[in-house]
Length: 167
Image (cartoon, rainbow, N blue to C red; front, side, top):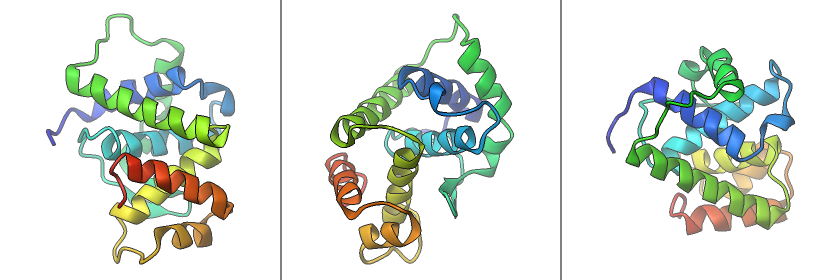
């Protein structure tokens, strides 16, 4: 995995928020917006397979990167004024499309893609791959940590497995 410029992820996150029509789910300075930014940043690295060298830790709402917290205002600016002269390189475009496709499958399967779903998806992936010790049953662990039905957790897990992120 090649490490890329951290600031490029800000444009990718803004593009994901636009393309997935997630902007309507939050107030500009709300916790919801921050959650979406954090989880999309995590998913770009884990599902998209592109390394921006962002370090994530587990907090109450799942994966969190201190590096991203300093850039919420930049991402908001990009959502409103996405630079017309910005082009994704091949790796970034592949990562963006992989995450979009992944989240669109989640949306179709669950009938929605909101902050709680995105948080649950990123949290399950983190439980499978980045929490030590790795839980014996990541679904049960997710259900302990999040208010979520087991049915939804199992559907998310099947898609995550299909993408090869959790086994």
